[in-house]
Amino acid sequence: MAVFAISFRLDQGPDYARRWQSVDAAVRRFSAGPPFDETTSFYVLEANASADSLWNALVTGSDLDMRRDALVVLNLSAKDSQFGGTAMPDRLNALLAAR
Image (cartoon, rainbow, N blue to C red; front, side, top):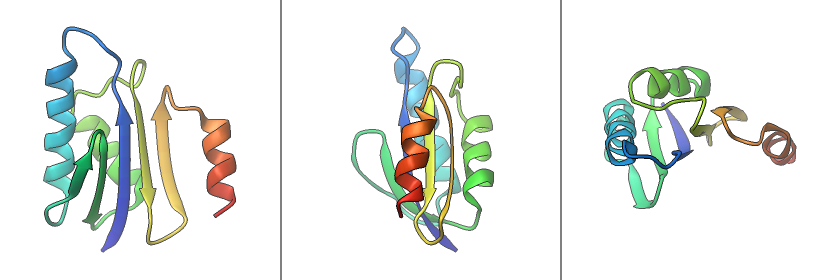
């Protein structure tokens, strides 16, 4: 079991609320217990997964659109991460390399 931080950004649009709820539902479905969700679009949870497999499960298990949205999954138990969509990979890679 590993501890993960998950953050996402959704593009604005008429379907924003539905897409946000689908991501929230997917995060809760893959969480081993109740996640920390006290801040907007950010979760800390335990899951029996790798960063890559959790990222893929969230993308395929929700209405995220990786052409418009961004998703970051950080394994806090190991130096493992996965991100995609409209995230800025160069800056994020540089920060993660400094861990």
